[in-house]
Image (cartoon, rainbow, N blue to C red; front, side, top):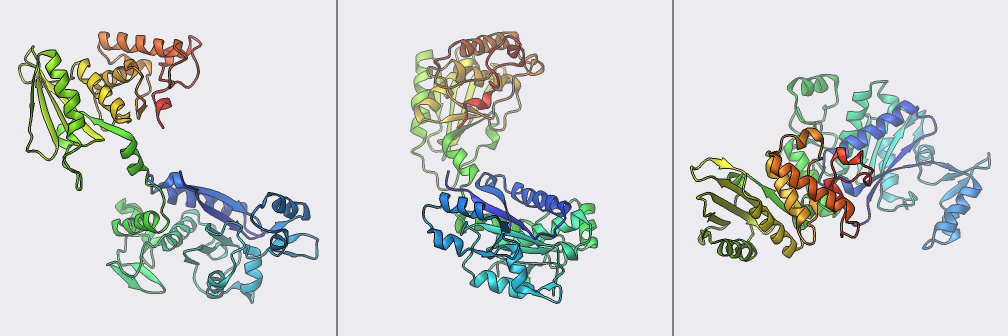
Length: 436
């Protein structure tokens, strides 16, 4: 993965610990709104004042910055400490007037400064104990500054202001999109969205809670996702997982043609399932006109297995018995999926699977394949979960797990049941251990 995007939290020397804690919560909750990007972020905390020994330690660790340049990042104070330039306490000295922070001057300094944050591309979330000359906070792409001194001891109110200003930093209401208005900066016109100009008033907060509305509207969320992917070039976990994993489902109705996907991917599935049917003496039938891969295998006992795939990494497997009643496919179909995943160099992801028996047979195929196929999203094998399986599947899965535990030269560790832990098997052996 590429280097993480660092969110640096900065508090002036008089900010209460309570506000520091609330800021950390607010920033983490904001990141959690974007599960596909959250792994790209790292939250650090910067301080303003350093001892001489700490500055010298920074010099020793700095390979690309000269010692003179590092010393120039600090200003010696009367008490012998060194104040980091462009830290929050430094900024306060430059922008304070009559006991208040001039936020407009703050932003001008940030835009024109040399950025002594030590991480030039970091986003600084600054919180000051002082009131401001206007409003509760301000932000640009380098990060927000919020006044705890204007908020009072209202936790949710303060956290909403932090998230609102982060929304500006991440371009939620850029001027080129619809449904925004210029009102002390660009804001969303949706009164229930946190990017609305008056969104963090008590009335707006109560309205969102009453309506159980999401924090940000869909348009603002889409704008921030676009900014994260295109401007910040963060890695999208969902796209990464689709590239590395074969998403397996047992609901063919949910498989639809994916835009931009050609038909060449069908060859990989065809080679596996058509060959398997011929070896078994079963009847293979494929809809060659469909944009998706769509095939059925009619088995000798009259049951029919259906395989549908919208891409090389998204497949559904289902089955009906000879009377047309839905059933979990036979083990051999799951073994076919494991063969396909191995040949394509994919992990198997358990997708949107509701049937425990289906999951167990899929896991069994991954464990018994030579070599074993790595898995993501597999269930934890608790005694309660294992008790829902058919006796035959439960026994086969337990045998496969025991083999994995004793075979220490296998290429990747695999899951264990909770009952196995009592038998002194290696700790933390869960299905997820095989994932990347």
